[in-house]
Length: 205
Image (cartoon, rainbow, N blue to C red; front, side, top):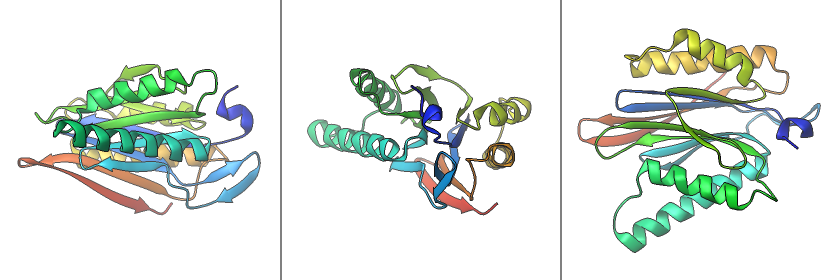
């Protein structure tokens, strides 16, 4: 049973470019036709170089972010070095697959910047299927948002254009998907000079 069958709505999108990733999601938390909250957090900064955007059961989204943060901190302490974005994505995919008989009901976007500046964006389903892409949309509003992303994405897109694109995509989903809405959270992870920074922003719609 998918999270949509529980009447849980959400829209999250991601775009990557040269040395940056933009993640975004709307803020409405709903169960069936009831809006539980208008300020739900679905975009999580895990480290300065990696973040998540999720769509699904709210408790499971929170659990996924906490599990990944703890695993990455443990790896850093034990090895003395940071976990790569690719390794973190594979680790989370393995954790989700290990719980396939009692799955965490959430789709997940994981994005970040590798030490060499390579931008990574992965999309995975509740069972941990892992796909790397340049842009992606998940959740109940994904069929609407993905069309906007496909139409507006270019290989040489810059960070400001990417921010506008993801906001436009989520806004379009909000207009058509009754269980998405109430503002947009953004996380921009990019390489600035020799440093990777993660910037969070909230937008009213």
